[in-house]
View 1 (cartoon, helix red, strand yellow):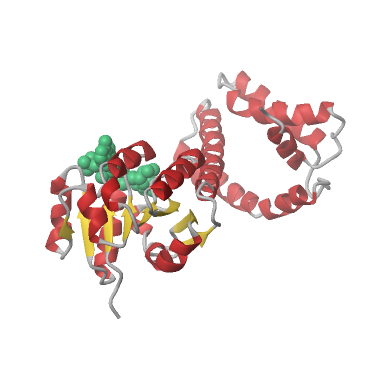
View 2 (view 1 turned 180 degrees about the vertical axis):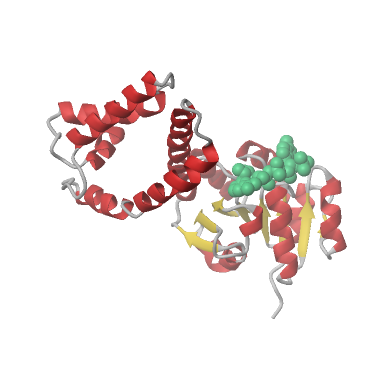
Length: 290
Ligand SMILES: NC(=O)c1ccc[n+]([C@@H]2O[C@H](COP(=O)([O-])OP(=O)(O)OC[C@H]3O[C@@H](n4cnc5c(N)ncnc54)[C@H](OP(=O)(O)O)[C@@H]3O)[C@@H](O)[C@H]2O)c1
């Protein structure tokens, strides 16, 4: 069966790997990059060169974009407005929901269907189930070109609203940075007594964090119920625990700053009379922030 021709716009670390995957899968593949030299290894493997973004968009019914950010994406597409009518644009560049919605409206105004997505993976894991591609936007484009996204990993379509994928992407990355914040703080604490990060991380921290990840679905059920029943520990116990960690941290000469926002959220819920509820009630406090 003939494979859908695809254009790949942006051949950085991710884009070049994406183009390689389409070539390997037998899609006629056209490529464009600001720095043309990066296209050369792909041309040697059978990709067709496009001299401009407009040429790339015109070459295929669907274009996959992987550029530095959504400002660059918008500027690149603005140079191709004459070719957008009837095309599908799949933008996998990491961006915000407001940018995705704006781009979706702008593309619709030029007759193009739009899918916006984010990649939870690295170049090395693309095209394996380990890479998850979350995306949202035009249902018609998803029906027609969903396979183009699915070729890059485990594809999860989240609905017609262009902003939904970026919202989920940003939320997942927030979870990741929360983990890094706690990680860097814990390493700084033990470093104050000369413990090496490697040993502490491998032998002590990782086994504990792995077991904690398994607790999250139970916390999710508490949150979804809206009642915050206690399965593990209540809010009072956690405020006291966090304050102990903060005191220890300060007395070791290490800032307690990474823990302040969580302690404050839990303490605010305590003040509202929820000390006996599960500590997952922190979510209620975060939701009420401006
Ligand atoms: N790398 C990862 O592991 C990873 C994982 C998940 C998501 N992402 C996301 O994927 C996107 C690309 O990341 P990457 O790692 O592939 O980045 P990268 O290797 O730095 O590539 C950036 C791409 O953007 C192009 N670009 C930058 N500024 C431009 C401009 N003003 N005009 C035209 N083109 C421009 C670059 O062109 P030149 O070659 O000419 O510089 C290059 O093609 C980002 O949104 C990133 O957040 C990356």
